[in-house]
Image (cartoon, rainbow, N blue to C red; front, side, top):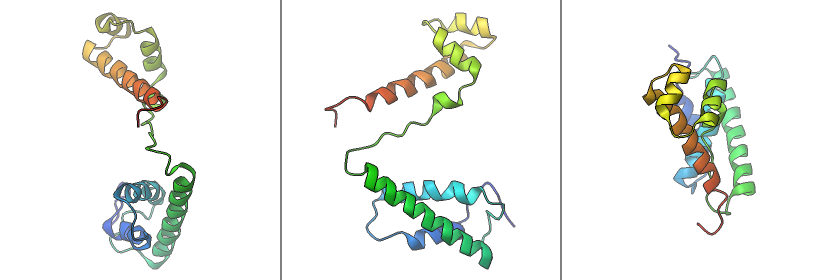
Length: 144
């Protein structure tokens, strides 16, 4: 039985077996974040007992993920925490981006204009404002 929306423990164990000792928990998390979408993109994903062919592919994907992790560590490691935005602005629809650009503090007026509830307008604008705020925080020096 397979579940294409879920990486099984057996599939994840392939990555775990290749992770070097001494990785920080954060680096392990990044390795897993690099590995999972590669596994999820394959139709064989979700096997509780991976076939030999799938196991070989999982090992290749795990090695690829570790190469990416090493590259990230070499290029960005040691220079302090790196903020990675969630990319909320990328996922906003054209309507949502227009709403955020027009926002002047009046959620009710925005809701009336776009046929949305005040609460929904607040959610959209607040998510956008939070993403903008966090993206600017990484640019501030001396706040380590």
